[in-house]
Image 1 (cartoon, rainbow, N blue to C red):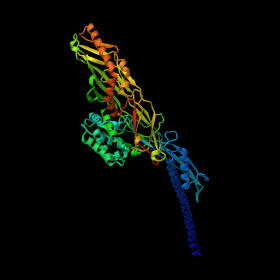
Image 2: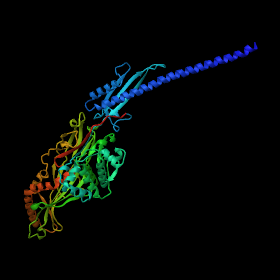
Image 3: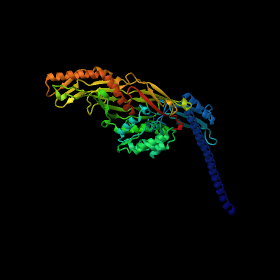
Image 4: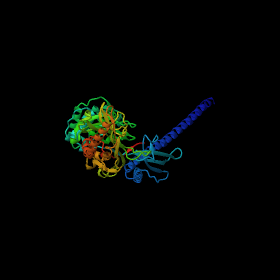
Length: 576
């Protein structure tokens, strides 16, 4: 009896241990089966994410045609990759819209109200059964893919039609150099292109934003352009000529250490104006090195005193003229998307420079006046200045479907306004203002003759047409000019002045009696009458002096030339 009693408790303990082990193994089995279900859930979610990623990318590739085609492409891609939107428990939605990291809220930066449309958002849901534990669960996935079509262009660039002498004079005046390049060299530079990505590499930075943040001198920018030309992957017909020309500019040792921003930000001057939410998308956009150098020089001169370009130009019997130019606001090269933002402003705009050209025209000498010998032989001057306001161009739309020859960029144009004045220009004269009468004769201590009022002659801006370019760079349609409006030349812009120059004169003298001032008034009026008769010829002569200089600065009076540099049709990229 004692042995039996001692063995029974031992058996009971064994049964208790077996029950415990069974419970533990049951828990482990349930956990393992649950883990399999959870693993299957995560696998299904990952597979669904791959489906929507591919669908969004496929839809974006067809977005340039229409949203309907993008939706069809996205739905077809999902089906090919094993997702049937019509199956029980499944759903798929495709939405066309705009991805913009600056304008749209995080986290996806996507909106259906922005224009232009540049992205496709795909959302999908699928029921995934739990094989062992619990009911079926729904998994969801969302992807956004974007494709940005980028145009690069400038306005007012007629460099290919200008002579080497004009460009040498202009660059020497703006940069402080003594260049003497020939026309072939300038044409090689004018026809060359480099990628923004080439500039990033040449500058030794990693991103486009880092490039735009640089501050370089005009000399350093010339070196940057040379290095980009030497390493570019862009096919340029006369690349060796362009490299040689830019090398000569670099070797001219451009003086000065004033720095210039490579990126325009918040309206401040900069070499490149890139209107993109993701500036890295601009890597394949191209610019022209010669235009870039001229813009850099104009930025450096903006707001400074007028630079004398032509110290003395003989106009024959009509006299002579001295020409100087002041850069009020520099031009801008444009890279960016087409269309308008939510406020109705064009996203991507290029502009010409805002320039004041000052001409001191020496017209005729006074004849011998016996009663007033001090005035005999004095020169009558016609102080003349031209304020050329900025012309603008904007990327209205792009079409990227099909091969490059069928692709299109549509650029809208608004020509600048030339406000031409006969007057004395004060140091702080407002742009476009003609408020100070013209002093046409001044002999200190003897007499001063001026017109009673300044005489503005405003030339209207050209109309705002659209110009269409194909998607091929380096062909005949890269440069297109809006036809000149009536009154395109300086002579026509000033045609109304010949009726006003013989108007009321104001003569002041501290020593001459009234009878002599009246005599002087009659003489000067008679001389002005002769000037009026020859004024059209005079102004036509000034056309040949002034207009090429303005054109070299990118300013065109009554016409606008657009240089379409590139249309980069974006490849699809996942944005979210």
